[in-house]
Image (cartoon, rainbow, N blue to C red; front, side, top):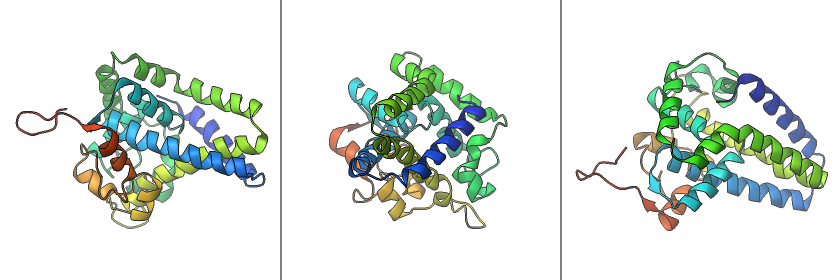
Length: 256
């Protein structure tokens, strides 16, 4: 799992470069921003969230590798770290043990939580369980162990090979955009601006996050690959179109 120093450096540098990007717009850069949002948004919603964290559908090994690689390119940490954080969120939603509890306010649940270095025993337990569950999956272990190296390496490669404006829009601006769209699910998706924090559905946010904005529906049935209407849940549409639901137990319950 990543440390606070790494998070601070990446967060600050990406936001500074994001501001610089606004003064270096280009048509190619905008196109790259859109494609990057599309691929990494799918990687987070379909790959990291529905496939790896909740195992809500089955995917061929190659598809799993592609989806998790797209998720990694969002620079939200390794897949097992993401899994552990999200599992802890479900287990302790909006409590003091929720890694990004909306009860702590908008700023904390939006991005302040990534700087928190206080030990969370449940988070550590879920991370240990994730490592055990995926111990035989060398691809997952590789992405988890080297996610920072891969992410920073790609940033350096892109910065030294792409035109400056294209790099800024394809990487820093795109990364920051997807970060905050994802984190809005944690904050306003849990009513962080209101007195009583609780999950809720936000159709407009759902359209920008491939269905993640239908957060109240997801909390009601986390193991479901579909969060609502396919017109709002593009991630669910992708799953139902290209993949199959995970197997059921003889009694009709989802297998763990």
